[in-house]
Amino acid sequence: MENQYIIKGGTPLYGEVTISGAKNAALGILAAAIMTDETVTIDNLPDVRDINVLLDAIEGIGATVHRIDSHTVEINGSTINDVSIDYDSIRKIRASYYLLGALLGKYSKAQVALPGGCDIGSRPIDQHLKGFRALGATVNIEYGMINTHADKLVGSHIFLDVVSVGATINIMLAACMAEGRTVIENVAKEPHIVDVANFLNSMGADIKGAGTDKIRIRGVERLHASEYSIIPDQIEAGTFMAAAAATKGSVLIKNVIPKHLEAISVKLVEIGATVEEFDDSVRVSANGRLRHTQIKTLPYPGFPTDMQPQIATLLALSEGTSTITESIFENRFKYVDELARMGASIKVEGNVAIIEGVEEFTGATISAPDLRAGAALVVAGLVADGYTTVDSIQYIERGYECFEKKLRELGASIEKIPIDDERAVQKFKLKVG
Ligand code: EPZ
Image (tube, rainbow, N blue to C red; front, side, top):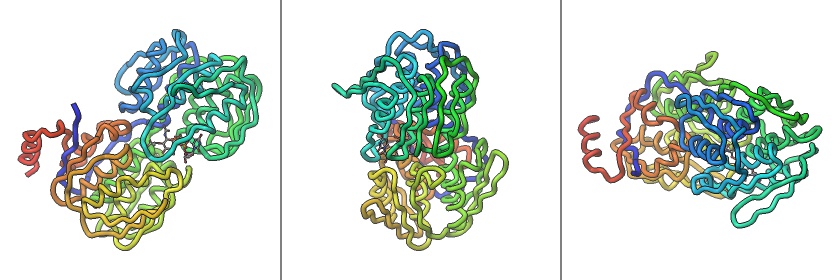
């Protein structure tokens, strides 16, 4: 049954929230885990839909997947009996392409359905395929499937034409057991790239330079068992930072790596919020009206595209005219029409959103267009006067663990209810008054 969120806005968020493991690191790490025939234990997994879809796919090709609890899994890839993956669900997630790199790296062949994912612009995978070809693989796309195979993979020098998170991880996966040395230049530097490299190294791979522009890999013959804990989710943390500032509350956001949040923290401080950094937590507080600013999304360490809708929501309520330039994905402003229903004044020209700050939002019935935009609309609902319902929350559940529960624990009036359930709406309204 489809669900929706119902929110009564206007309550500042106070208290503490604990951030889950990083979805986008976990997706790469789970794929990497099938590359050894020994057992791998992965901890701090976020319990979100994209992760569960990938785990099902891994199980579907014969790997042994043992869920120890909702955040810990044991995987053994020795039982894999199929290198072809094509399910409805796997076609909907982006990270299915990591199975291509992992299976190609381990078995020198793989067949995976073309990836889906959030509709945030055209999302080519030419750089992934260019990397596989450079390692000696043949790659064809036929009948909606990517087929790749090689007699053997041989290390190579690869220069990426665009900085791509997915291509960087995928080529690392394919190259870590290739013969000889691979150098990948112009790579992405996101924290989850470093996390996937650290995980592969914990299994015996020899990868250096992750987190810089150039990754150097010396191929090893085999990978072995490992126990690994995934880093905290930078974007989930950033979303709670934006929610704390937007509601003019004060929230201690725990289990984070403050360095990963710097681009977000700097912008929050610039517009007038307070950000205090501790060893593994940050506190975000705000009072009174925030100010306008200019933001351009960039690969890490720049301002993350995955935080663009959440910060836009905040700026839509801040004094003056702000601009946001989206330089990674061309179709990431689809939430603007939804925010307009709540009173926001945003004009999009090409890849720039021009935001005229308004004093307040009013509640409305809105629909999540994708994962991060959906989270941003929930933040808008938390601030708006009156009731907001957010539909299509399955997008939000792709990447946020217990989103409404974590918000409720901070004092928000938000509930997940079945769509079109008038009685549940009335019950919620009676409860929150
Ligand atoms: C990853 O997507 C994330 N997804 C996205 O997170 C995130 O928005 C994005 O990186 C940027 O940080 C996962 O990790 C599963 P890219 P990915 O390859 O790997 C172009 C979220 O909300 N490009 O770094 O698909 C591409 O069009 C999601 O959690 C090519 O031209 O992004 C884009 O303009 C949504 N050719 C740019 O590079 C290629 O072969 C960056 O894309 C690959 C990419």
